[in-house]
Amino acid sequence: MLEKISTFAASGYTTEHLQLFAGVGDPRIAAILAPCHVVRVAAGEEVPNPHGKDARVYAVLRGALSNTIKRQDDNTERQDKVLPGESVGELSVLDEAAHYSSLCAVQESELLIIESDTLWQLIDEADGVARNLLRQLSFRLRAANAQLRKRERVGEFYRQLSMVDGLTGLQNRAWLNDRLSTMIDDAHTAQRPLSVIMIDLDHFKAFNDTHGHLGGDNALRSAANVLTAALRPSDFAARYGGEEMLVILPDSGQKAGMMVAQRLCDRMREAVVLEHLPLPHITASFGIATLQPGQDAEALLAEADAALYRAKDGGRNRIAC
Image (cartoon, rainbow, N blue to C red; front, top):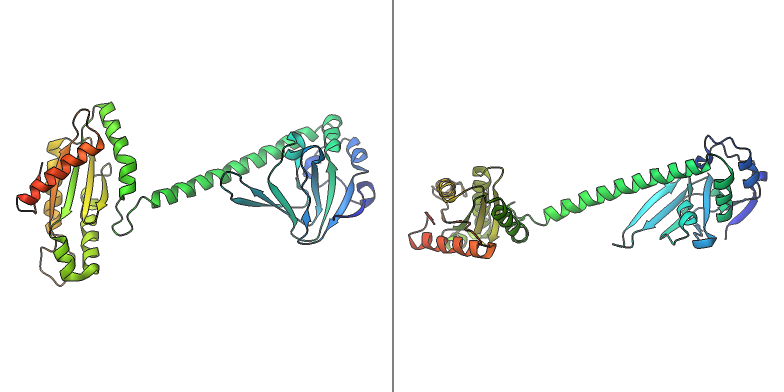
């Protein structure tokens, strides 16, 4: 229960430092607020937060409140502090809807209670109150939008993080499933070429068996470094699965795809995996496919995979299309 200690007229407080009435010199404000109750709230005590026709505004005269706002879409919470001079509850009065928030005193506080009817009377009769109220709500809307944008940026960061392979730093299969079809559709729409290179590290199982899983992980990382160092900023590289990787080359036809694949093949032979062994440490086979009219992602990857097997059948450590 809130402890009623006086009316506003008898409390000794004035409206001078209350934001809702800042700069409003209308003498009717003091007269309208005179019978409103001032209550004392102990630290940690919850403050009732009624809605609808029973909604009210709490103006903090002394102390501070914590306003915990619950988002219904994802069950998350945001905590705002309501400091001396600030108020809370105006929106509940204006729209009479239930707003999912809870109020609690951060420290012993004294609050001015402005009931719904009283706030409407102030808006109707005291010049400047409506303007201040609009200013406060606009500020809160901007603050809420800023927090929403921050949440979206954080969410996008984690979404992007979830699409990166933790071992190689390349994009992962989830990213590939999400993006390749879109890139193919864009290429078809713009009538621009697009090529892909399917890559498989040669004899990787034997390498793994000989040098252990740590050696195998180093080989995968070295191969990924070759790809990222040799590609244009507009190209993409993804770990397709196991020791297979995929390079996507927008705006590149078959001839350009073959040139890139040959460059990658040459650099892969020189990649250093284990310092104590002579070169070459790893080699790879490369299958190139160029997007054809009407072709979808599944068909393009199948074509690249078939070319990769031709490179393997031809002796590995080479390219094929």
